[in-house]
Amino acid sequence: MHPQIVQDKPGTCPICFMDLVLVSQSGKESGELVLMESQVKLGNITTKRIKSGSIGSNSILTGKLVLDETQTDVVSSRAAGRIEKLYLKEPGQTIQKGQPLYELYSEVLLTLQREYLLALAQHRELGKENPRFASFLEAAEKKLLLYGLTQGQVRNLALKQQLSSRITFVAPAGGVVTEVAAVEGQYVAEGAVLYRLGKLGKIWVEAELYPQEAANVKEGDAINVSVAGFGQELASAKVTFISPELRAGSQVVVLRAELPNPNEKYLPGMQANVILPGSGNATLTLPTDAVIRDEKGSHVWVQSGKDTFKAQMVTLGPESAENVAILSGLKENDKVVVTGAYLLYSEYILKKGSHPVPGHNH
Image (tube, rainbow, N blue to C red; front, side, top):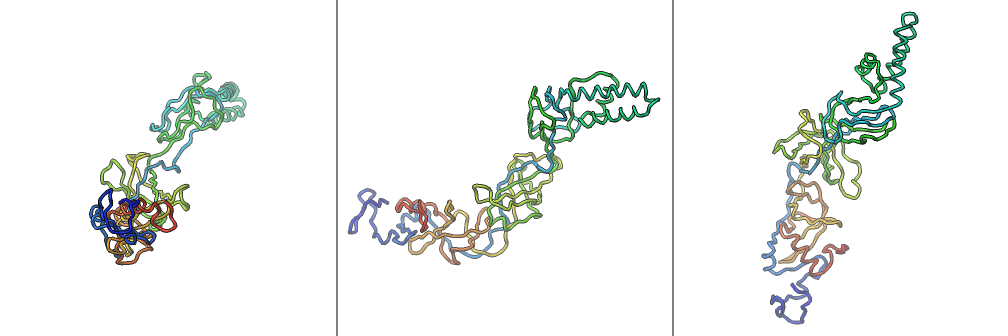
């Protein structure tokens, strides 16, 4: 327990009064550690012979619901002008098609209204004599419609014969407001983005998985999704995308699945569990807690003698909530530490000050 106490004959440690052991017993071989029987018991260190088996029927990943970006609508300013009023000022609000969104003051729209009223007056006075005034009126009306006015607003302009300095624009489609990109009083150019609208009829679920897990799933596969807040209810989703590259700064790839949401009960931002079908192939398996993982890789502790343990690098395969497949580094019937592995790791670092696997520096 106190490596600074060294003597050339048997005895006890003057600090903790435990029996001193031979240096050869402390694990001269790299990555090897020798404990006393009492330490093994106190640390609850148990071993299990590794056998061939299955990691289970499925893997569970933590995911998140996000908006389906293929169903996003952008509402942009139909003309250059000043935003006089925003009817929706916060993201997350639901809107219906035709609902007022914003009011705009625009010199361009005022000019187009004047042109329309002039064409209307000419048509009424001279239309019977000269049919071309009907085409002038039709062209002026189409301009107003192309700039975003509704048929009702054009009829109202013709009826009242009054210019409107503030034009109200309505939502071109229904959905949820995901972004408000303007404020009242702001001057905007034609085409400037004012709102982004998302639809909730379908929603995406995204999850991160390791490359070895990605080998068990492909685009088009059906998976089950459990959304937080809906108990044990499982919904079926279809895998639509698996990232072809690792996410920047990590060792994971992104999986995306399409989840039907006809009642719009699932909302973006909700947490979800993604259940992937596991591999049914027989392979060497261990409990997940038996494997120690760090930035250098993964290793386990193998019992190499009585109360003697050695760190062994391993290559991991598919993983479930309880078990993980071992692709290399171990052979069948090796005695592997299944509880207390992290205590062995800590004890080795404390005693020897280095990583238990050769070539790794702590």
